[in-house]
Image 1 (cartoon, rainbow, N blue to C red):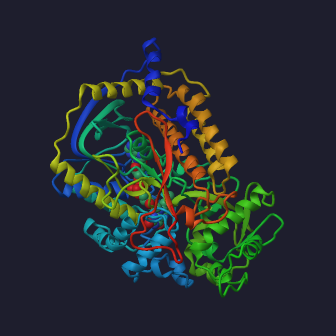
Image 2 (image 1 turned 135 degrees about the vertical axis):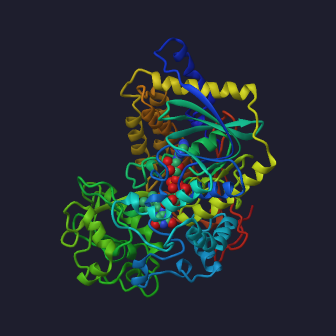
Image 3 (image 1 turned 90 degrees about the vertical axis):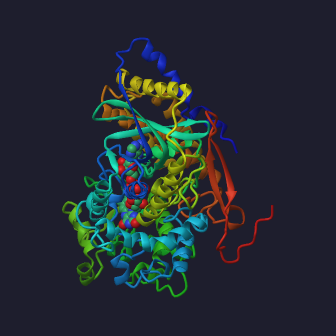
Length: 618
Ligand SMILES: Cc1cc2nc3c(=O)[nH]c(=O)nc-3n(C[C@H](O)[C@H](O)[C@H](O)COP(=O)(O)OP(=O)(O)OC[C@H]3O[C@@H](n4cnc5c(N)ncnc54)[C@H](O)[C@@H]3O)c2cc1C
């Protein structure tokens, strides 16, 4: 299906060009100084994926440059992550007897692989749509890659840190890794945002962007580029993802001709705090997630009713509110998550919530359980005096970026469809530290092989002209007279609202269509007026807004295309999972300046099929 409606809503080169006359007409144009840097391997993003890829390239003796649009590691999702959880079950699951076979420290490679494919998200896809070669590679490699962190100076690789402000959980892993990368000679450049890739003769030969501190337009030439720019979790109004997670890599890759896959699989969780005056915290592993009772504004235990009506309860379910969720409903906790989200959203949408929230009632949780589970206490500390042991806590679904199944399509070696461009971590379909580590190694290694075989390309005159156009477009945004319509912060808020309403936890055709129309309106009315008021920080916001529109379009259109409910694509109009027709990956591509095209391909079930699966007759 070609999305005709998206024809004019995609950011194209000609759109950039159309801003140029404004500069030439004599606006008080900010002229940027331009610098060009050359390296063998350019790595974009200083989270786990980017750091690990840069170490791999540098170890092979290559001139490796790591570029970050913020401060090194600090803007990343990696610093929010408290543990290598795909390998080590969180303490609270162990304490409550809820650790699952594939998520066990002692799990075999096969168990881990099966867990990844069934669950999806951690290595991409959702419920059997993962790239099984990647899932197998992660299952085989993750132990080695985790243990290897010790060589990079991480003292306790299996530590679990979820105490204190969220943006410090992962420091025990990230800071030693960064120190090691620097020690072996990885060069770093901070506060430099990459805005696009230079494509020449069908290959990626460099990138352009700007340096926020030096106030310069920058051009990079490289034999290989590894994108490790993270996800687009900030695209939603309710989000716990770090603020710089705006889908830059997704949009840049798509503009450069790479394929995006399964973009509809954006992950949500049920446990977002919805308390006035308190940030949108997500309640991490805690008694809250395993013991609580969800109630609506009338005090009804609505999930109990939902579970009975929708036959969620499995064999041996006790349906006792005194039991933990897994025993209560006779299913592994992870399988309950989509149902918990759906039930909570339904209560809210049908008016049985309060202030767009439902309530998590922990008041009956025995005191001794609070004491053995530090995460419960952690949550309480952050709630500014709200005592959740005495009062039900308002909660609502939230996008956390912790789970998602879509991104830039890569193979098990971290290669995208476009020669010269590689990807690692959350910008590609999976999501977890171990996935970022393994794909970081793979992408770094493939980038290294190419760099050994290919000299750093010279730019043709056409490419040079193109980079000048990009600089002019940025100058225009910097120079334009500020207006409310073109304020980057307001545009971002508008996009987030549209995305939450149209492509949030529950979706349907009409809502998704409204989402596409809303994003198109943003693109046509607001984006051409983007103004950074001479501020390079605002210019970063402006470019993020452009990328958010494109990432949003890809999520909405893929979700509209997948006419079933699977994993995080919960469609009210197609409520069932449909393995007969939809064991497929959605794909989004754009050739040159043409419209974005959404299509699908059968999942390559190379190692494992769902029980009872019959090939779809074609
Ligand atoms: C709240 C939360 C909790 C989580 N908890 C866990 C957990 O406990 N265990 C686990 O395994 N996983 C967890 N995850 C998932 C895990 O954090 C991610 O899968 C992983 O960190 C992704 O690493 P990455 O390197 O791909 O991206 P990131 O760590 O997000 O790094 C991306 C970097 O790229 C930079 N960047 C982006 N665009 C540009 C650009 N245009 N130019 C230059 N730089 C750019 C960003 O600023 C950022 O620093 C959690 C995620 C979240 C959000």
